Image (cartoon, rainbow, N blue to C red; front, side, top):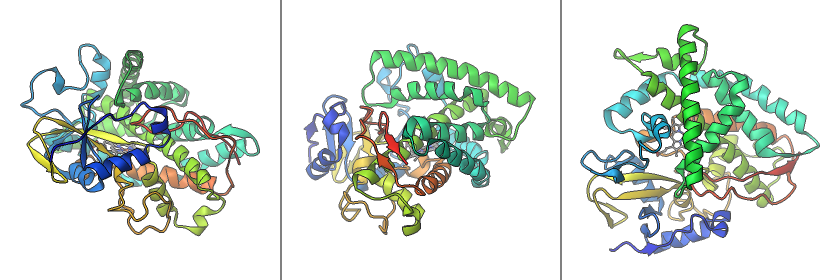
Length: 399
Ligand code: HEM
């Protein structure tokens, strides 16, 4: 079967507003379609996405035997610091190096250490919401962002007066992960990466001389089989934890509250009517904050019966997979009693989200506090315009 060619409307505002009807058409057309603009093969259905997430034949780093500049998404010469902050990002590594690095990071990021943050999260979430009651406020800027950045800042051991800077750097750097990136955004991302890199380097030196009870200290000291993380590896990990952790969690809070409002589901006591864990998974499935990830094909293979060639690239569409009617009954409906909670939004296989335990706890605490109120949308919010990281510009609400 040949792969149908399409124009994926990733910058079209109507598509961004609600991409799900178009992605449904794509799923019905073929398990794989070729986007003419980016030359990416888009994987549309749940089975294909799940198989790629768990297959060793699809790699997040360029194949060793692929030559030329196209083997890297970023030109290291033009974007020196952005590249330096990505060099040891777990997301881009495979094989032994990925496994070794992931084991070391996981040791410094255990479930116990995350659970110890619960009282901090509860305090932060309650005090933020208490100060906002009765007024119109922006759910993202006034609640989700300060909440999430303080949790990740506390976990890492970043001084509070640096949170604003961290937010700014993170916002600029993550723009590089979309399907199309403007020159201006690339230049901003490079500058932010430079500042971020230099600051984190000095922070690691401080933690080595004066250890604290935080993750940067643990990353600087953790060992396994006599292996330690290098400074570069720690910097890449800190940046990944901040970027991966912060944006996805903030947008999940925003997307979820807007979904509930648009479906006329009263938030008051929602967690007393349904299991909070089911609510979280269903809302993440319904409007995934991260919509796609790319992989190289290492050897000729088939996706849903369609051949994908060695050294070509695929993009797995997580949000589309989560709306596949072959895997989820009535996928366009919200159902907090769904028996199948196995969505694709946290990834799968060796790259499965390393912070899923933290994200789930942050969301549980946040939703629990938010759901002691009825939340009213003051106006219909506007999307940011990005496809890859799906969220809103601002969400004006009243509780
Ligand atoms: C709702 C929130 C979140 C969502 C939806 C999410 C989603 C994902 C997904 C889909 C991947 C796999 C990417 C791939 O296949 O290439 C991933 C990887 C990762 N996530 Fe998350 N994430 C969330 C929150 C977090 C948090 C809070 C942290 C940590 C602070 C975190 C840290 C990571 C890391 C380190 C990886 C890389 C794992 C690897 O490549 O081995 N994430 N995440």
